[in-house]
Image (cartoon, rainbow, N blue to C red):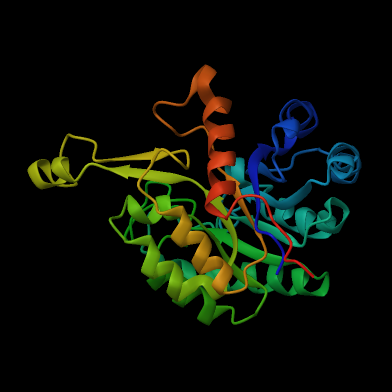
Length: 294
């Protein structure tokens, strides 16, 4: 079994500037993200420049991600679908076989009303990806939406996942899973991961702290915040159990830290928190790999 690698998310447009400054802290993978569009970026050139940095350090690009609404194709999302296509076509140049993002959504309509559009758009994208040896995965973030209303993403809970995977029943479509987005909905991530681990293609390293005393006194619809997104090592998730479940299922992907959310380790402390998370997750996976005696 290959070692589960630990990395971080980096904005694709910033990758060439940022990666050289942080790679020597020990990040093993980089998930390159784009918000709504890859724009006029030359992905082939970006791939060459990024790999010139990562390859000598034995680091890798774990995925390309396009976070937008490819189902509407309007406004700032006009290029999102085309950006998915570009990412799929260029993934091999980055050395990855994984393209991820949001499903999109018919805005402010119940999730089930987005399934026909999802089936059409991602049925075609999944076939395009399969022809190129690429897998597609969806982050499980609700982006502030509910079952009845919202924007951006329908892949927010297991009921939606079942509908999505039944609509597009291919083996190269799965999840970019993280415990945090389930915990803020008061879902226990451990039994969920055990059930769905076969569909987990990538893990976002983001944690959550829940204040159950606030929930008991004010509920979840009151004026008091009851959950905070956290950098791993500062939240409530049992990452040893998460990694054990992944290993037992034969997972050989990465856990990529999704920073920029922690209420404490932010601003000038951002990479203090991220490097702590990097080292913490490496310990949770068992520390340094030690070969058995021959």
